[in-house]
Image (cartoon, rainbow, N blue to C red; front, side, top):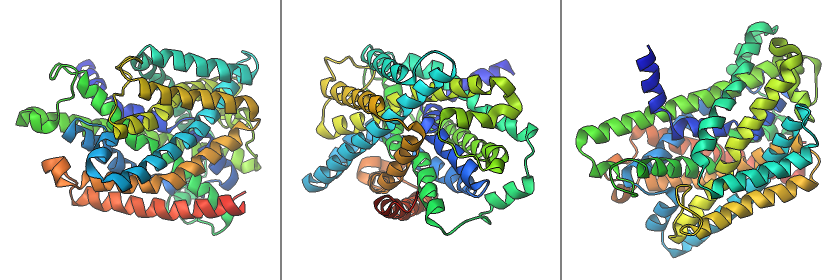
Length: 431
């Protein structure tokens, strides 16, 4: 049994970290808001997004495996000058959106520390941001990832709530089947946030880049990633299978946490019509299983997910833009050899620190950042699908029928969600 567990742990890498990073404080706050505001009415999003997440992240992962290059570098290869300029502008917009998300996550980390009685949240937001930048500049992201992905497992406490709280499982089933869908703007606006924080565009770039870094670390091509076509048949097949297992497990974990948070908050806060304005409000959902320790348990999960999510948020557009510009990138490289990448990284985190210092409503900002991601997802999904379907780039590792069907369907769904998100944001009809 120990041997099996060790083999399983050996499989887990970029996919698990991507899944854990997807449940960052923005995700936690959005899912909690959904459960508290609409009960189980948004649970149908869990079975809908699981195949979408698996397909989209597997496709992003496979672009790296098939080429040994990041998604940003593949955009440089695939598109002509004018489309590259448009995509570059979208990447800058993604950097701005991620800076907003970083600010929200830093504020969440600060509130987590405040709940633990460690001091003012604004101070901890700034200290956390500075600490993360310093850690990343020294090339220690692998340490952050190993430590904080386990802290994120605390979020599974929401699963425990489902076994001890008074859960109406008939109502949960109705929610999963979409029988509680509502046609009003508050509901639709929050659905965009739920979809946006689950199918987050920055994760496409992250999954690809992290897989490339993992391949660089292998004892095969020195500091270069060895693509699947350059490996012998058995080794290439084994690598592809292991990578897929990693992605599938990571995405399942992510959606399980999503389901548990919505259902747990629906069974606790939703019954009393509690409006979530602070991290302390969201922490109350854990009281049935943790009692007085609910705040501590929630804080650890909030802090861990924030420390893991912030480097991913800062790193993904930085990787994309560096790859598009043809410059070096990666946490495995020092700031002198990957200057442009680290400048962008610093801009994202420092910008987040500055915003976090002056904004007073972290939960509102967390949900807003999820809506922005919902609006931004479709264009990057389309770009990813065009690259992964190009035989000149992907060789025999192009999308199969299933991946193409789910991938393009996801792009269509996120296009519709983005249109709703733009409308509700401009008209303020989503609350």
